[in-house]
Length: 323
Image (cartoon, rainbow, N blue to C red; front, side):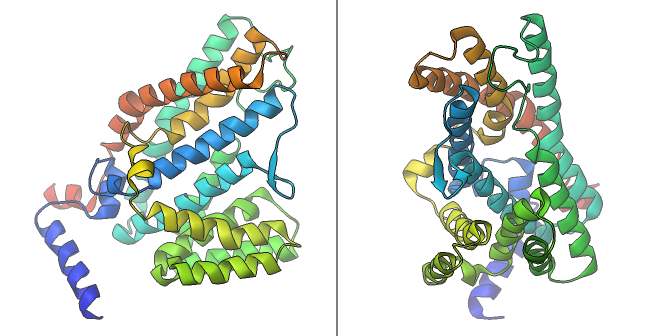
């Protein structure tokens, strides 16, 4: 261990000794500091808005723009989510490798807001007679939620791997890449590849340098025949490199809270209702603007009255030692 590592190890030990959370624990507890000083909240919000923006085309019967081959901008937003999730989950586990606390943290982060959102949207849509959205091009109540079980599966796979071997991120990346290349394609191997890449970037900080990212970019260009592998080589490194920085404008997007999850779980039903009321011929900009304003408002309410209070219930090592 070099002098720099000893310095940071001493800082961490001092925080624990003084009853303060480590950076990863502070993230898990939903505190505003110190991890709110990076770009992750702002970057995730941009990812959620990319999903909203992209879905607005499909939900209103328009062609959904692509950013690379057959991948939509909404798909890019989801890939950013999985990349960041892999990074943060890896950090959380290494800060507190306890199975029970790990599962409680994950459940409290995802389930309360999801249960409330699903209950509210189903009740409202039923009450106003729009269940099934019969006049809309797409009819599902919330077509965004299908990725959430896949994300939770990534949490479980990482936890199991971490219990069995010392390098879970590397193992998951190899398994996901092998499954994608040699087995029948699946969404779990697809998104799991980006989750595992994010975990690798947390475990090996040297992979986040600009020089290494340029190497990844060259490799992605060479791998363009397989668009998923190409994106897995470049999206996670860029997302994590940006997320770990602290840029005033991007950082400021998180000053009202972590709104990305709320936007993600509310945007689709909000968009469906607006399209049902205003009609398919309504200009896209009007549909998008109204959906964004309402979704951000619901996300703000969700964060401050459901998600943040739930996050404060997450257990930490300090909680156990105090008890």
